[in-house]
Image (cartoon, rainbow, N blue to C red; front, side):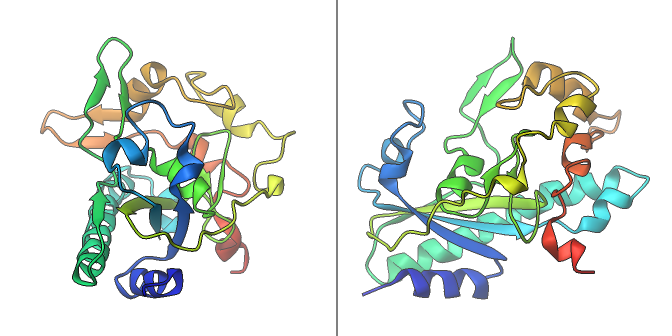
Length: 231
């Protein structure tokens, strides 16, 4: 019989920095069509993994290092999710790895609004990896908001991790990310992608996608996590 401990040990062995598990019933309020059960009717548990972005990316005067590794790490999460899915299948269980980022099926051109088939940030919250900050990023106590997230759906009923309720990671009286957004895209609950995307995502003449703005990630007092504060 496979256990949560076995899954987490494999996730770390495969390269994850964090791994948490959420029971599928925690996703009962997900939008219709975007619940784990909509993707996999036999799903019992959602395995959520994360890798950290190097803090130094925020210190570069060029946006190229941040842009490159912000795109590279989702592929690393996809590799980890794929290996976990193989691991589960080889033991006789059902598993579906979910892409960490693209592609989207749901896209509204008029709003520049995209929605992945599974919200990774909500999955991370449900699996106890962190809280949802006012900047809409997951804040993990150790790694701050410098994490990229991936997931695997499985038909195994695994022991779940508790949801984190640590308001000190995003205090109610803090609005730095909201106040600092140059296009007023944040309201403390969600993000207006129509305002955010033209400012933060730029395609140059060569066709490269560059991330020009990450103020809401950088300015967060807990954005770099306790790992950074220990140094």
